[in-house]
Length: 258
Image 1: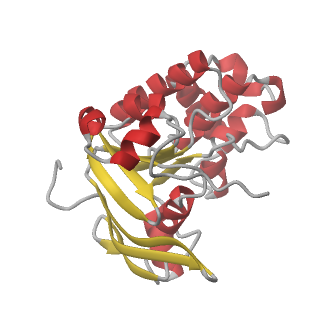
Image 2: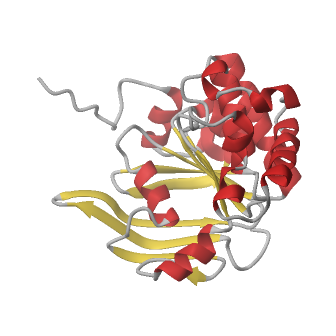
């Protein structure tokens, strides 16, 4: 940890949908300037954990603090203040097809009327440059871009408002291995440049190894292992070993419905 107060602190966070318990007492700290990646299989609750921090879902119980501010059962004003610190790279890029690239990048700035359209475009072009895209791309529509370029635009949007915390939701999904590695390198570069804290969720171990200072594994509603990235190959946890090496045999059983 770089400071005594974690940037994000989760304690005993629980979330269920009817009888289905998804989070069953999550404990996790993300330090200031740290990059933490939550790994786990599909349906293990990674996205639910992220949505609870973002306030898109309300945790049933437990505590989630951002810079010491409690967000569980908090009011709209608190969520608005906390969310102003966030940037987000969505799983499918989630660009607006009806808007040119520069308006996608500066969408938050324009929506909150922080700047005029001229300044918003200047900021967008500067952020696009940070992710390796030229100003000519700014006038294109998302449909004219490759999957890798769309991810870059989405990353530029995530940093457009100079966030303190950036969330990455399966950042390499749908990309070939080379482009995935390019995006991973960009994530490392960008988070360092803007000095942001990063929390990512993924099942891509190549991505997790590259972008994380620390990795936590979510299984059966709990964090079953957490530690420095370099320690994960010697976790001593059979569930972690099975997951990171992609073994069919092990304690994790895939449910196959007839």
